[in-house]
Length: 236
Image 1 (cartoon, helix red, strand yellow):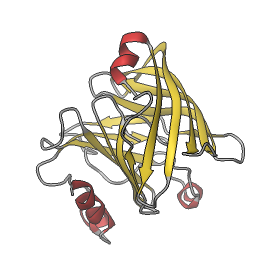
Image 2: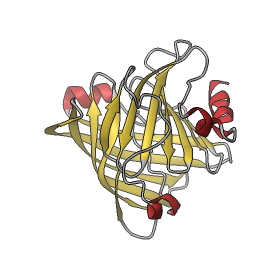
Image 3: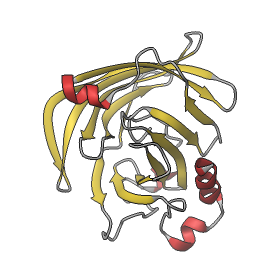
Image 4: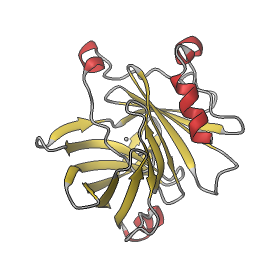
């Protein structure tokens, strides 16, 4: 029900433009807004009624909100909605190898192999890995650890859908992944993309819970269809 409430509010015409701020569902509390490269803004929030460790993210581009996702304490992709197509995806039960943020921190590498079921009836399988490179960076005063990653998504029958590889970043305190310089291939060959974080807005900051991305939002980018690339912890 909470996901339906978020989607309904985001799709109301003029809401974001009128108030210029994102309001989490009743009872939920925002804790972080991330301004990223590639004309992307992400608002993160938590809801006490959810299982411990669960958190939500809503992504905004030049044309408004386009993606909602929910993860658990291990950064598993529990639920997501592509607001452009309206398709919802849910984590399928019985993962062969569940993603584990704790495992990544403990050993430096985490592999995963899990299924997703979509509201349009499609079932997919995602396999990949994350590895800590040992490199640390500081962005807007926040320390992040770099990871190397690769994943491949197929249909349940093994037909190729897309793959991605490159770098991401994690923050241990927030238990979140953030995009980095990477490549994505949806069948036409690898193409680069970069939605690395540029600024972190916390409660009290002027940009907290905003709705307008600020970086790389030129006129050409605003009209280009960008691939919806999943990101652990904040799924694109």
